[in-house]
Amino acid sequence: MTADRSLKLPAVPDRLSIRDHVAHALRAALIAGELRPGSVYSAPHLAAQFGVSATPVREAMLDLTREGMVEPVRNKGFRVTELSPRDLAEYVAIRELIEVPTVGQVALSGDAEKLEELRPVTREIVEAARAGDLVGFLEADRRFHMALLELAGNRRLVEVVGELRGHSRLYGLAGLAESGQLMESAEEHEVLLDLVLARDAGGAEARMRTHLGRLRSQWESDA
Image 1 (cartoon, rainbow, N blue to C red):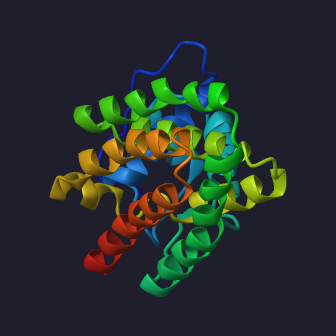
Image 2 (image 1 turned 30 degrees about the vertical axis):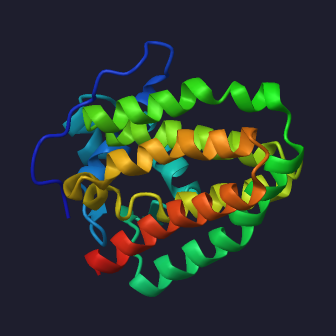
């Protein structure tokens, strides 16, 4: 199945390679629903839509494959990953088991200077939400949460959470934006950071649980 309308490469920083530029555009198309779950898209077709060669599109699609957003289909292209409500519920349950206590740990032992360095990222998240930039929101949100978890000092834990986020991060985001909850979700990041900096482990854990629960609720309403 091919895209219904022409896709365009959005403006992104010049430092990005064509491959990164295409991956950015594909994420935007996935979030917007221009590339639909269960549909198969060929690299040459997408390349024609973007006005680039097929090579960077294939490379970008392989990046998205590693993130769990698409899967290769032999001799056809890439299928946009479909997840059931049960899949999504299981992913967020695992994230809660890992991220909630880890945030509490960081609140008790995290380096205050490194934590404060995350302040500009929380503002990026809010700015992206205000602008309706879902890709920008996702990228800043990922940087914030991964950097926060890294302060616990467990590289494997960060890798596992990164994989879980990759599998499920597209789902529910558009719904949050449509319901007006995206800004609330964005603003929670600074509240969470303040709680961690205040060494309030219990408060940070509760906020992290609420933060993940908001996404779970949106998934359930979309099901």
